[in-house]
Length: 366
Ligand code: MRU
Image (tube, rainbow, N blue to C red; front, top):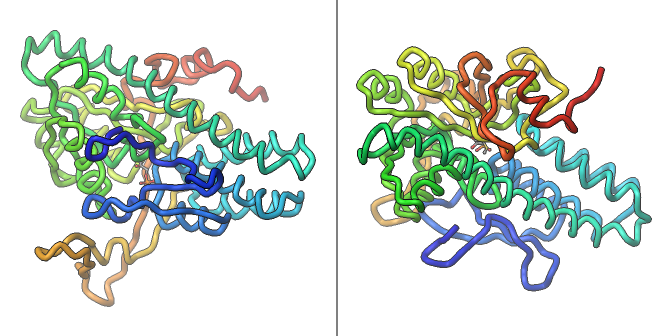
């Protein structure tokens, strides 16, 4: 998508043809900075510190991390070490494991001298596929939005989203935002309610920045405002992303998503989840019991960062010293609260049968 009129993806190769460049998402929206990754350790740190984040982008970043590792040492031992190091960076987004498994399979079939080139090629393929996948999600989600738009006869469609499942969370287009950008470009009047998404504020910092960059009307709200807006007919639909969805349709996403789904159900607002099939974990059937929920550092809750009036990026402390802090990064919305999954193969029900029929090649037979 465009930044100051120039098209960007979130990850690409530098002019040298091998180093990996990313947008440092911890600096947005106050500074647009590009960071160069040249080693496995730098790639792993970028994922862990959330310079790159969002399930699909974490997957592609890990693939490039493996390529950087192979460039340094393409032995079997280093392949195993690199996969374990990258797998340990973030536990919840299943795209990470999906990407590592995919690249590892390609590399295992090659001798060490051929591995680096093969790894870079596979990572580039994954990046291109992610863009195409999100465009398809956009097309199918567009149909849902335009149906609501017809009923509203020219009044804007109000869409609520949580966290950042935008182009910054993917290689381009985003998952939850792909239908929004597609509808906006088609001239459908719409407006997005953007949950700020404590503690790291990916909604306020990233989703608002993205939507603003594309001229999509939006309003940032505090995380607890969604229910109130739904009670007052201010939300026509909810579209969120996912970090892992089970074979039965339970959706794990940024903490607070479940409460939005409850409020949506109570108010008859359709709740959709936009996701690529790489986010579906076919090994799991019960999201609440089985999906590992990342617990992040207490400092993310205790401190908040932003720009001062002088334009400097600064952190200030919110929580008194000595208070205990818990920082659960994700929660699980049970499939029964989900009206549909917007995937690259269409909008499907959040049920085992519908998911298996849409992606039969991914089903694991027991
Ligand atoms: O912790 P993050 O920022 O990596 O969380 C990812 C998210 O932004 C989401 O939960 C998102 O909705 C799914 S990723 C498209």
